[in-house]
Image 1 (cartoon, rainbow, N blue to C red):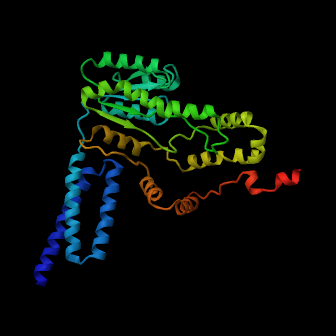
Image 2 (cartoon, rainbow, N blue to C red):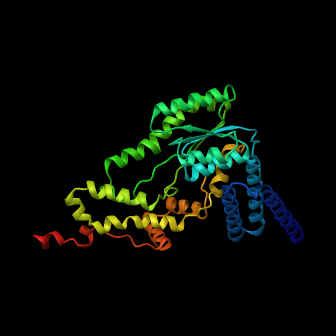
Image 3 (cartoon, rainbow, N blue to C red):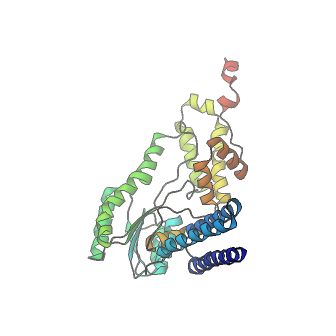
Amino acid sequence: MSTFFSDTAWICLAVPTVLCGTVFCKYKKSSGQLWSWMVCLAGLCAVCLLILSPFWGLILFSVSCFLMYTYLSGQELLPVDQKAVLVTGGDCGLGHALCKYLDELGFTVFAGVLNENGPGAEELRRTCSPRLSVLQMDITKPVQIKDAYSKVAAMLQDRGLWAVINNAGVLGFPTDGELLLMTDYKQCMAVNFFGTVEVTKTFLPLLRKSKGRLVNVSSMGDIAGTSDKWEKLEKDILDHLPAEVQEDYGQDYILAQRNFLLLINSLASKDFSPVLRDIQHAILAKSPFAYYTPGKGAYLWICLAHYLPIGIYDYFAKRHFGQDKPMPRALRMPNYKKKAT
């Protein structure tokens, strides 16, 4: 009986080892999401071996490995074959890097930019291949979106558009909702929401023709901005804020909000490659994921935010980021008005 169990255990251990080795060799340069799955699998293995008997633990682990191998076999990338893609927000930042990256891979790239005569657009024309076309496309202006659609459709003719990547977005000042101007809310919605919807609805006929992909890029901190931009946002708030509200919050509190942007800049990586690889996977994998979490530790923080009570999550976030959030004057000095009268 012990010999049978020993032989079976070795077989159960060998099968997942071979499968995991195959997955590692095949997908070691693929999307970071795959590595999240493998980490989860390793955790499952540890739990199985600790909770269950060795025999059933290895059986369950082997089945899990087989199912994962079957699932990951659908993650092979399709050939680029000059597939056509549209990227919005190609002037700078991630969108600019993505246009260059996809052009290097051999895609036919349509780079939508806010200013077709700006430095970002000129650099794309200068450094990329003739396959890349720069399109004037302020996504808050439906006329420009329709004009871009006409140009893309004319250039592609019957080929269809393989992917639309909604990347364009604007920076909002990270402060209390009462301090933000209504124009800030409207601009954020015009670009980050309604603009994305407008682009998607306009280009869907070309996507249907090729049965292609729609990729939406969203993040709380891909856009940190510059000190000049921060100063402008601060000035707009201070210039338009009612005197009573400014007194309740305190100018020192309002000016301290830029510390969060400084923190983002200090923690952010200038290496876009994890995001670029995930977008490449999203538009080329035979079975792409529903969502991606590129970046070191990003998946962990999303899990913590989803499953932990808010109070516990805030505690860990505060400890990790090492930042004491300032308080408005009215909260840290609740009797200051009474003393003033």
